[in-house]
Image (tube, rainbow, N blue to C red; front, side, top):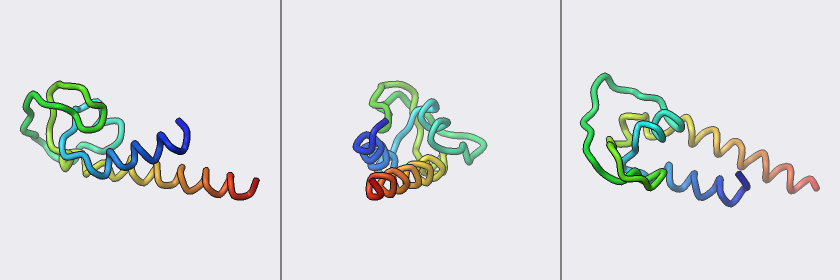
Length: 81
């Protein structure tokens, strides 16, 4: 994934209200014991499937932190070249 794609994904994660369990597990940590789910569009991958609120995956904080660190490192790397 290049820098532009990482920035776009970061923005999606920061603004997503709903998430499927696949994206939630990939970019966040399931933080509740029980979630309300419904058929809807995942605001991360764009697929229509069973979704829940992003808060159930701690608002993707794990994925957001990781992406911000990767972006920061890539910028440092390109600045040094």
